Amino acid sequence: MRAIVWKSATVLILIYVAVMGFLGPVPEREILYETIRNLYFHVPMWFTMTAMFITSLVYSIKYLNTKQESYDVWAVEFANGGILFGFLGLTTGMIWAQFTWGAWWSFDPKQNGAAVTLLIYLAYMVLRNSITDSKSRAKVSAVYNIYAFAAMVPLIFILPRLTDSLHPGAEGNPAFSGYDLDGTMRLVFYPAVIGWIMLGVWIVSLRVRIRNIKDKMYESSL
Amino acid sequence: MKAAYSALAFIALPLFTLAAKYEPVTWDKTFRESGKIFVVVAVVLLILLSVFGYLITQDRRISKIEKELKNK
Image 1: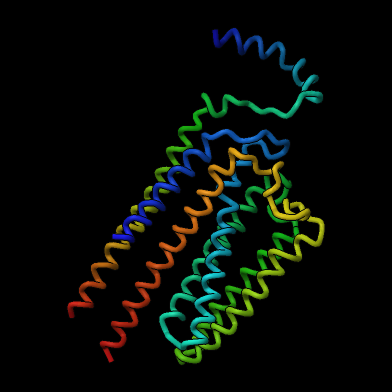
Image 2: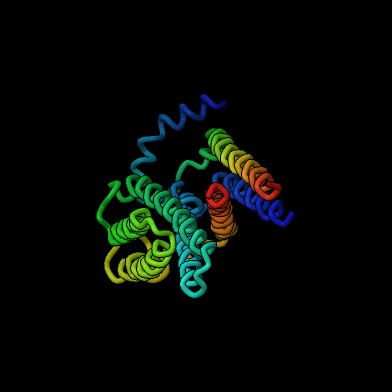
């Protein structure tokens, strides 16, 4: 019953975002023009990716503390969800960059940092698949997951802010100054972030349940 | 009436482009009012609703299998 409530809330929030994202008023900015609306769609991808990776990290730490297998399942599926939203963030950013910075890829520190982060998380999946014993797979990949998160923080949140970047945020918080994000946009932007994170959790939970069913069927066949 | 406006715009356009350099930032606001932006909203809504529908059916299917496994 509670599941129905938050899942229908997800649907309603994202419908609101899609409608207001296109029809709502936006501030007038040079170069950006109507593409400023991408803030409602491109940026929440990164917020969702970060939320997924943080949750994945928490489950990995929980696994190392308790050695409970279900935590490992949640950790890997949240990492998978993070990778999905990370790639969406990267590709939507490339489209936006082509029409505002003039190139799909300009080897901007933000772009490079995000790409390297995703490669590190892809390596997490490769590492998992290379270990057959389920106990050592869970343990090794949990430790690697902590390393991956520790690498993501400087690659995305620290290093790009220390150098010149085309991407907003070199001067502090990206896209959060009054100039970039005014009050009317916040009314759509914050729901967008919450809605996409909820959708991410929904997708992850489905994958976890499928994994649990598979495990159960495997156990009963033994 | 519309034709008169567009004719006027056609004549005045070179003047506007000259003046544009010194004008504050604006773009064609009619893009939202009569530029058929609603078509895009409809398309995006269709895609979103399809994804939601897909998720809901998968959710139900998984719940069913979970119940079957429980009753086994």
